Image (cartoon, rainbow, N blue to C red; front, top):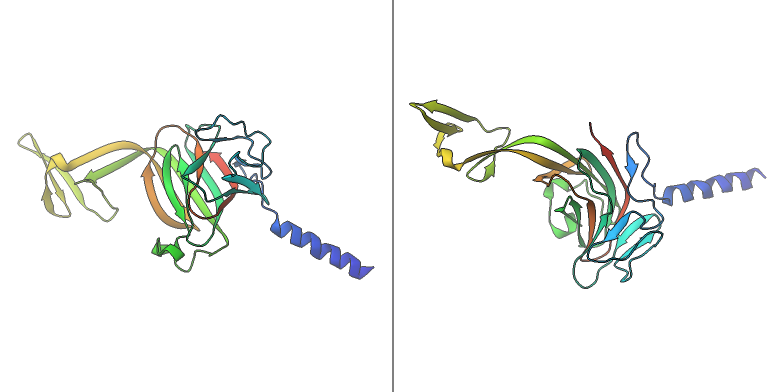
Length: 233
């Protein structure tokens, strides 16, 4: 009897390990994907109602074992949330990439290239931290009111020393001790999305004021799960 009880515990533990979380696993976060079907999502360029469905008509996107699976096929296809987001937010998800596969995540229409990074010889900062053929995490924070300064079209880094002054009624500027033309300087109040994979910074991008969250089907098989969002104050 004891052996049967132990066996049942092992089976239950195995099932729990293989089950993808629906998304409401952290305080303040709301799931964007219920783990069962494509309710709440729309196939870009199609009028198809995906409520309760586990696949798009062309099967480029399917729901399998608690994940949205992007399949390889003709052309690039995009799946978006029905809901649009205009407030600051933090978006989290997990993805699994097949060999040298290529996909993407859209934030209000702007795309982050999400790929089988290491086996494609990309994102060297992830070497030793990226898990081949296994689940990796994405963490994206979108904030408005971020001042972005550029000189000669390049963002100023935290290590840069930039000086702007007025002399005889005319502006002058120096970058790291060298004179720069003020015509090559731009300062903008922007909305910035910062992207991290497995807690490693990838890049930041300027994004629009509102829009949905999307995932892409392009090359190879790609899976997404545990997609959740938290609006920030």
